[in-house]
Amino acid sequence: MHKGIAASRGIAIGRAFLPAKPASCLRASGKAEDLQEEILRLDAAIEKAIGEIQAVKEKTVRELSGSHGDIFDAHITILQDQTLINDMEGAIRNDSNKAENAVIKTIDGYCSLFEQIEDEYLKERVSDFRDVAGRLLKCLSGSNEDKFAGLREQSIVVAEDLTPSDTAQMDKSRVLGIVTDLGGRTSHTAIMARSLEIPAVLGLKDITSAVRTGDMLVVDGTAGIVIVNPDTSQLEEYREKQNAYNLQQIKMRELKHLPAQTKDGLRTVTLCINIGGAQDCESGVKIGAQGVGLFRTEFLYMNRASLPGEDEQFMAYKQALEAMKPYGVIIRTLDIGGDKRLPYLNMQEEMNPFLGFRAIRLCLENPDLFKCQLCAILRASHYGKARIMYPMISGIKELREANRILRQCKEALDAKDIPYDHDIETGMMIEVPSAAIIADKLVDDVDFFSIGSNDLTQYTLAVDRLNQKISDLYKPLNPAVLRLIKHVIDVSHKAGKWTGMCGEMAGEEKYAPLLLGLGLDEFSMSATSLLSVKQVIRNLEYPQAQDLAAKALEMSEPAEVTKLLKGFY
Image 1 (cartoon, rainbow, N blue to C red):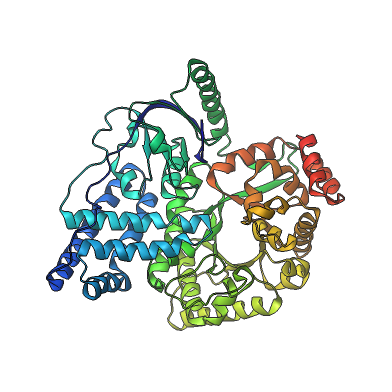
Image 2 (image 1 turned 30 degrees about the vertical axis):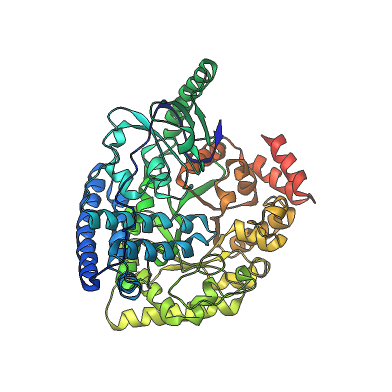
């Protein structure tokens, strides 16, 4: 039995298929003799790769949807980025590298920077650079190899990793499940698998060494388990689980068009999804999400070697807004810093980056960067219900300065007669304890609050949630955290406004009764969690949830709250 990351729910049972490893990604031997000729080869390969990517995008749009094609726009942007091109050409000129080796050296350099990022979603974007590099190398070699030529019957695909090009290339109707050494819940493979409802377990590290084509596999995408060559009793057990899961999914789909309302009808909340780009919207629409509670705009900045322009950002936001109509999209302004660094910004090393120059602090110190994003969001708001949300606000001065810059952007658009939503709502994340404590002073300057439970917990308890040595101290159910959440919600309600949550707590069905009882108005989560949370809410009576929350707030230890929740269920 092998344990990995549960990336896409469901159970698959079938034979393994391992795609052929490409030969085109090998380094070229020897030094370049004619440097100009190598640069011309590189330029031709880039042009050819862009044409191929455009064709792959069109195929993906036909087979899946327009939103899944968006990832390939990012790949084209990477290939057209002049900084990246200059770096590859420099690797040819300075080191007499052949074009193949220049591509590998340069892309490896960019990937090593991104791999240091601890944010899972952004770290997974390394695969996009790898995909682009693989395609460039293939174009340089003139190879037309097809790794999935042998996929002729329904099988479970087992690979080291799957790039967006891989998933576009393979025949999805023949894929029962997906298993990989690398990748996580926010990788393109995971997003695609969830969209197609293909069970997937990723990040198994060495599964390709343990499996051969033709082996029988059981893939439990809910538990993150893979069994190689199961015995008869295991097969029987998992076939029963598979049938039960499929029946449950049929019942869950019936909830799609039903409100997230308690069974006594006393309380209705809004359930939204968190996204990293417009390509993620389809999975939300598919299960009846009522909007986007968090658009992580960092993706637009991370997948490149230079800042995105206003027009490019405008198109990305516009696509998401149009995809989610008639519901709204909360667009979080750039949240860079801490573990998320941009190689093209001069960001100095810091002793405590999570407490340092990041998020709104960085934006306020770089007003041109900030205005570019705000203008793009405002322009996009003409095409759907957009809301702007500032991250990492710790006090009233930051909030008012952000709003002042926003007013300047509105005035600039007015002067050019560019349409936008003049009543666009603005909000802020509550992820710093100081902001939670003075929420009553901040509420008049915003239209809503959104609680980032991950950071709020981390900062309140002074626990680095990524530090394994003290991870047992990271407890979202700590009464101190719960009291801050309750205070923020009460303040917003008293002012006639609302509070949402876009941290991991919001997508945990076991926390839903407690958060409901605390008065939370909006829950935002990954699309795969939404129907489960809705089911829990629809099975509750609101007074039950309120009583649960009241008891939790009186407790002194997270273990007591955990015991209370277990007893409640």
